[in-house]
Length: 81
Image 1 (cartoon, rainbow, N blue to C red):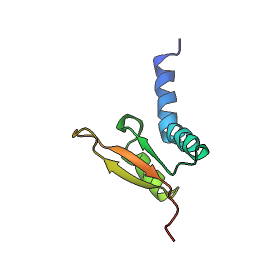
Image 2 (image 1 turned 180 degrees about the vertical axis):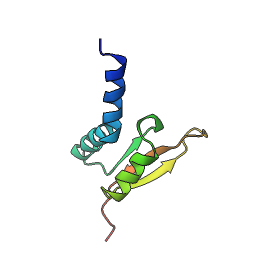
Image 3 (image 1 turned 180 degrees about the horizontal axis):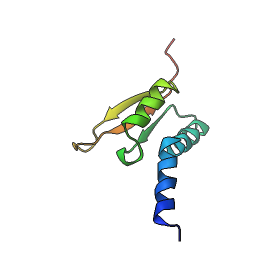
């Protein structure tokens, strides 16, 4: 069994390196998709900032269940010409 501290470190590393989001984007692109839906438990404001400013994704908040936390739509759609 993994220790609690190792689990915490692993979870924090997954979030700061955007591993989960990257895996979702990779899976979506392999299917020819241009957007993904990410529930709020997998993303936070600092991650949104990195996705927008560093990687150039469009990240749109969506309050799916009228709660206090937003889910997000991450998209990389090509411009309409």
